[in-house]
Length: 380
Image (cartoon, rainbow, N blue to C red; front, side, top):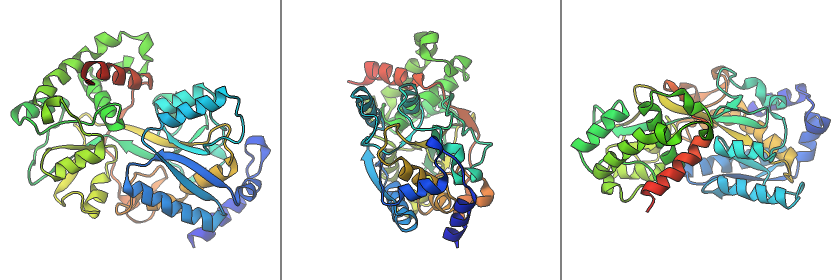
């Protein structure tokens, strides 16, 4: 039934895209194409979901979705910049990317993206336009990337071991001093580690408006001074005395489950449910956000300007934005990634996602600047 609805909408929605191709022409050209999709490969739930998406795309559209697992999408950005420099303007090695933030800003400014194409996808009609889907870390998307899911930086604790977790970063430092060796965060430039730094800086500066500006236009050292003072104090009482840090969110979940940490960190408020489902976390664990809110962003899908299978990539993105695919992605037993669709189009547990109060991301330039300074101070 879902396939029939999708087919009807596809036939009814004849729109003109890049090079004036109608959606029917695009789906015809996409049939038989292989889409090399560069996406983070560090989560078994996500990898399993993409395998399902590939089987559906093959059955419904004759498109093969090949998940190229990457540790950091910046590697893909560097590859595309190299292809651009070499004049490889067609037949590129990357057909689709999972990006946001600094990587989007870099790809957009280097003119590495195909489009605009997003608002002409048949599935665009289902997207919740009240979400910040038209900007990415304060940079306008201009139809060059399609929203895929909502991320929020939240913490996870076991209510049987810690029933009153720190409600602010100030309380977190006090807690760490009272209970040494129980608190840490992933090592930047791991995504969750850098996000921790940003959320911490936002609280310490009372969300100073200069955070929405490029770092070259502000006094970076002055604004970040409270951050380094805080971390200097935290590291002396942190897990392994701040000489070692978890590699990412998954390791903090494991350390929480092992009883080594009192808080884990994730960018998915529903991650706790899928972790409980697969036995990684106890049923007594819950996610929460600091009282001021959760650092929040949208993550997106984009197509490089020189993609070999741009039609297949558009069909793949359109499918991944469909109610069928978004409902499965939001299923708490499968991935639990909060959907970007209007709630009325979702089915199952995807409808149940509760998002926390949102705090906007700083300008993308803060990401690299914070990572560089962190590395200088604590990297060795």
